[in-house]
Length: 187
Image (cartoon, rainbow, N blue to C red):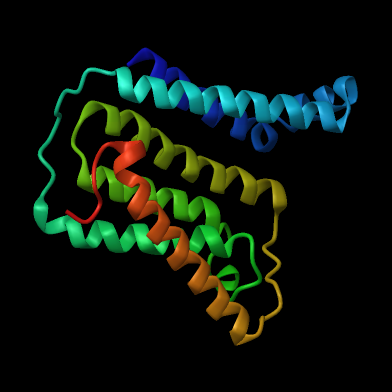
């Protein structure tokens, strides 16, 4: 469990540093230069993801609570909405006029849905920490950026493309989920 915890914390702290400690980030950039900083940032995230994957697979599973089966459909709906928000984060969409941080909000919904579906210790560490991290990140980035400037309203065709991309990504992940998580989504 220590490897999973280390990986999740490394992932969160690496992402939190630019928004909570901009002085450290600018100091690293001035010493390393922009490209080396980005390389170090990416390498740290890669290490954290490897630790998360191996930590997840190697952790002894203990059940903390029994998820309510009645919440399964709600959780699956939250996951679908989460992926729509995560795709919308990188596109011109009306959702960005409603949700200031669509990717982080999507991570929060995705993590929360997994907490509704899983009651084991690994899930609590991974998804609970990522849900908390996304909330902290939303607050710190909003403080750093100040007033929310909303984007222009895009064409409806852009909205349709965003929904199609989200559906394709979700479908691919549903098919691949048993292979990387060891559990089917729909059965």
